[in-house]
Length: 402
Image (cartoon, rainbow, N blue to C red):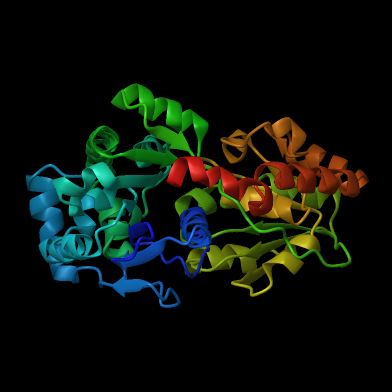
């Protein structure tokens, strides 16, 4: 057997896309292990990661199996629905057989919901990347009365769910969500007490999980990016938003921004445009975009960097959310000033150094940035380089992942 250290990574995230915070961090983690010459094996549960040479792929359970698991494991056995969605006795057997054969030094688990698939004998090798505290995300959404158009990835058919939600009882849905919050929090605590190490992105969530679980093995990791390929471009009279448009935490704040703050921006400057980038927008949202002549909806784009550099500022009007907002860090890497709110700024370190405008009036912030965009652009790049660039921060992964 090779003397190289071995890491087995079990994930449902499509690392190839690197299109959201979790996939970015998972890609960073794999890059770290490669740089340390680890022998890597990836078990991909959701059929993605086709470009990862070390990958073994298991398709997610069939819809009928998922439905049965949601009923019996989720409802009758009292497991979180997010966990029940991915559970399969067959997949569990295959994963643990792979762990037996590969004999890893480290077993990296992608979020708590997959921990149910790991046998007890491997728990002491398990490093669990939580991404965020999902129970907190649900709690925030419930507290702010934001509609649950789909309850995460276990929604089998969003149109069916929307019909049920609108016509058969919002109170029942809210009861289900309250139950899910309790069960998910119990799972988060259980995993913290029974795994080797637990990783989060947000320091406040680290503190919360430590207090709730009494575990001293909860640590924070920084999401890092390579330095951006900056180009000489002409800055246009536009602001930009980017993000997955099938995610409630993105669309809820965006719709509110268009209805209120963007109207005030147009009144102040009728030529201002809002460029919206991101796939997955439902028909109703696309209609809102098309009915406003100051909005340019691009959908998915290959060259995100150019669109960011051509804009005056990123707007990140988040109404709820947990972890760290990766879009804010990515914007700073391109020297794009950011206007957000307290939710969008949550979890960022020493934010006063960043030049980010948060918690204030969007119109006033926009005017200040427009007066001296170069200043705030330079602040953002320096801040990114210090705290979130891979060149200056990847070595810190040693402590967390080694």
